[in-house]
Amino acid sequence: MQNLIIDTDAGVDDAIAIMMALAHPHTKIRAITTVNGNVDVDKVTINAALVLDQYDADIPIYRGNDRPLIAETMNSAEIHGGDGLGDSVVDLPPTERTPESEHAALALIRLAKKYAGNLTLLALGPLTNVAMAIRLDPNFSEFVSRLVVMGGAIDARGNVTPTAEFNIYADAEAAAIVFDAGFRDFSLLSWETTMAYPMSWSEFDDIAGVKSVRGRFFNRITAQIAGLMKDGFGAPGFLLPDPLAAAVALQPDLVDDAPHVSVRVEISGEQGRGLTSVDWNQQFGGSPNAFVVRKLDDQQVFAMIRAAVK
Image (cartoon, rainbow, N blue to C red; front, side, top):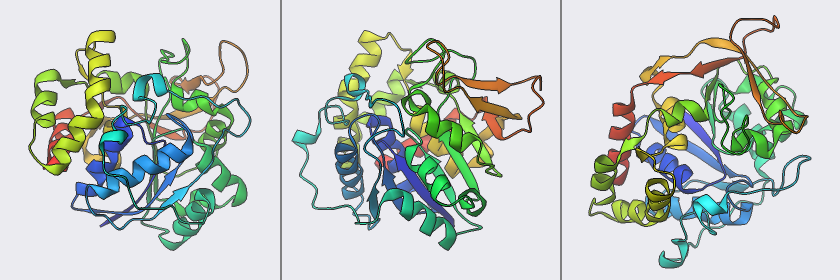
């Protein structure tokens, strides 16, 4: 049984990723920590609670940072909706869950020590909480068995600037701290890799049409963003950044290609801020610090999503 902590800025794809983890038979979610990102952290915390409500899951939620370490606060409400769940929250029964009093960064440190040797940390948003945990306890990375991050643009094809992906750009200083912290098993799933594995629209429609409580929840939260992807962006299928990262965390054997290379984060410069610099050819001589996922078995991922809504 794998112990898992999910650090999230709970937008639509984060919610699907959490659903996958809740349904996974060999994983126990020990906590969800929330951070400002897709929307503000209070909405993120509500969204995490709403996902847990669909499974009657008794899992603590720890509210984290409401802003980046240094940068100006930003969000992606234009993609995920004003509430972060495709403007669907108004149609859902209100949650009665409340977050724990302990700050997310402190909870990360405490739980990492408690489950040292068998703990996977899945980071789906800006890395502010994780960076704070590292700064508060320099040994934090030693307690985490595996870190999986959805973020970065390994071919410098960003989605918020020409070279930077949202999660890294939103708190580049935090990302730089995390990438340099020395996690012994760190897998990075980039924006470009996730774009290579869309779920076909026919497959998406089948899942969105599942007649179950979780199927209807999936349909509600994805309807708006699916329309934007299809009609606004002309995407060939439903894009799955965070669910793909969740799959990497839940079933590492579905990864087919992940070279171990040195990856660093640029924190300065108008053009370069948030750039994830991948030293493919060891030109800078840095030690490898990340397994950069290039290929994976997407059929396993789609099967995990189907299982999550049944």
